[in-house]
Image (cartoon, rainbow, N blue to C red):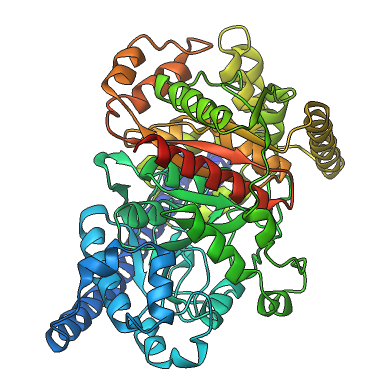
Length: 589
């Protein structure tokens, strides 16, 4: 704008100045443009230097870890890594507590496997080199329930002296000054946080790619995404490089990678675990609350992690966390459940593999003596509007500010493009598109933000009313828990940023603040793929076609279901997940 101003001033000079004034104005304009160009070039060079520095730091850590593993293996030739990696977490902790395995053998076995998985999937952002020193001082924490267990953590979880980049260049070279509460508690309980894992740029995506560390891919198919935003965790655990991970979830960010990569995960009730030291995509946003949570191969591992974290040490470090210890009795209960079930939410037609997975699990639960009742979530279109308007209440201002200072990841470009439009243009296009593309119109209207503080308060009130309406519907149906679809299988690369509607399956439970978990129950069959060829979708529009393309070619990929419980009933959610897991295992024998 400054260049234009100079140019116009040049044109407005007294006509007596003639061509001299025009030349002077044009020269000023050109000089301004050259300055702007120089700044742009300098900015790109600075961004490039930051990226290279971050990559070198990661590569140095990977190299040092590899050297340490080789040295340990040479000095401990009898280490049985295959045995260590074959054990469940329950078996592993039992052997560690009974001195049948050493923490060193476990640590180096998983470190070696992590390095191998990272080469294939590009899932790690930093090896936590302090973990090698922590390994030497574990003995005082031997009584901890996670004694000797290596734990991976998502990039946005603070670990002292390491960046929490959130995939953003602005956060590079800003190491955390202290550990997050969750990391402190993990250490106190004997666990060893040993690696940070990859995320999408800015976190508000269920892809897993950024301009610093690149694209993470799926362990079952390298042409598929690992999901996001806890996608590095998804790839690492799914690939066998980690036994237990900690992610965070604001719209499905724990559940999607776990479902795409074939293992279990829990999004707890927001506030049940401490979020101090866990960076958010949109700090201050209250409509959809983010929640850290565990990710692991089986449900018992999730329960053990929750039991370990829900301790006096966490409650002391973060007094805002309700002092509710883990209810073992609820988790181990065998009382028959009254289970609501949903086959679709009227926003995205489930794929054949989603429908089959749900029906198979429903049948198994009924055979086991549980009562299944149909359930329809109230006003899903309205709920999804609350979700999108809530997460982008500021019209995406915070996200766009975070993205400044560096290049935009290709996976994010299509998603971000409409955010950049002026509000008046979004509203105008939304109005014009309504008769032609109702869902396109809806999206443009939703990303305009709420508009003002009074409207924000009104939005918060609407969310509260919707939560109460949903709870009333649960009471009316007399439901204990809810079984619902988890979208899948894993998408082909680059499709996540173009598809927001599938998030209606997951983000609804962030809006409601209900605990929700995923359990893998099957894989995509040849018959599923054949039926998928006839998929049209509820709306038969651009987004339904994209969804069809995104899930195509998924034969053999894992499929999951979601298990949901009312707020603060995290143990009940886990108990339900365990029931599904056990019944599926029995059905395969």
